Image (cartoon, rainbow, N blue to C red; front, top):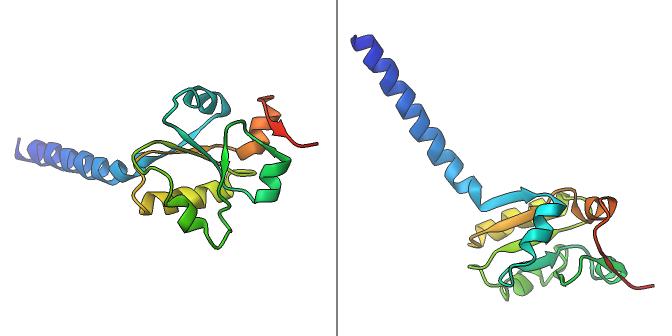
Length: 133
């Protein structure tokens, strides 16, 4: 009976420990284009394109603002965002937005969403773009 109690105790400790580890990871969420489109209906959401200004000018997701992750004034521009409101990030393919998400999380942003596959997936699935021809 004592061995059974030890196993149960070990199991519960493992659950508590893994729950604590996953708690901080809930701040960043990968989302599909469908989920992103639904989230955009919330007026408090801040949609941010982290690609270059040139790429943003050529084509972008409607109603997005551009904050170039590789710009020397990236931190200054990000500080203008509201940390308590959700931020939706996208880039070309998802790699840069992942780096940006980590940086925003470290800066204290509460809820961060990344568009899985970036604008490439958004286009592939046929969602609207703003383009300059």
